[in-house]
Length: 198
Image 1 (cartoon, rainbow, N blue to C red):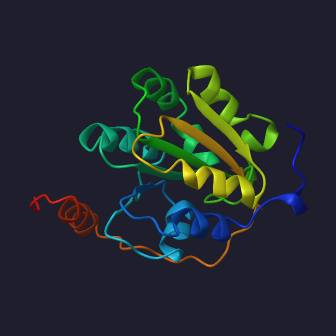
Image 2 (cartoon, helix red, strand yellow):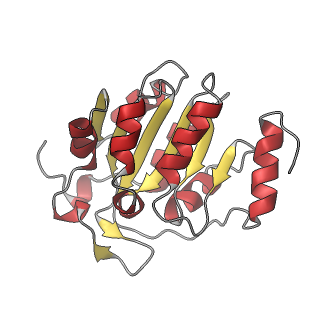
C-alpha cells in the first residue's frame, strides 16, 4: 500500500470510539499511554483492562485472556511504539493462533509518550506486514473509517486471529485517564468475568 499522507490519517479518538460502539461481550486490553486514554475517552467499562507501566505487554496479556476466555472476543488496542517493544510477541501469538484475538495498532509513526520522536513504524516498518510474515491469518493496513467498520465486524469470538495497523494522525489529544489503581482494575475486570476478587 502507498504511503498515507498526514492529511489522510485518521483521528485516534474517532477510530477507538467507532471500534467500541455497541461492544456487547467484547473484552479490551489497552497498551499503556495514549491507547488507554483513547479507550477511556470512548467510555469506561468493566470489560476494559488498562495496563500501566507494562510497555510491550498488551498483546501477550491479550493472548493470555483469549486462552482463559475462548468464548469471548478480545481486542487489544495499542500503539506502534508499544507494539514495537513487544515485537517478539507477534511470533508467539501467531504460533498459538487464538480464534478470538484481534490487535488494533494505532500507528502514528511516533513514540507519543516520550516526546513524539519518529518510531520505526514512521520509518517504514509495517507491523501488519510483520504479523503476516509471522503467520497471522488476517492482517490489514486501515486508512479510512470504512476499514474501521470492517475491522469492527471481526470483533467476535470466532473471527480468528487478526492484526490491523490503523494509520492515525501524530497528535496528542487531552489525556482522559482511566483508573490507576492496579488492584481495583484487576478486581473489577475479574468481577466482570464472574470471578471473585483476589
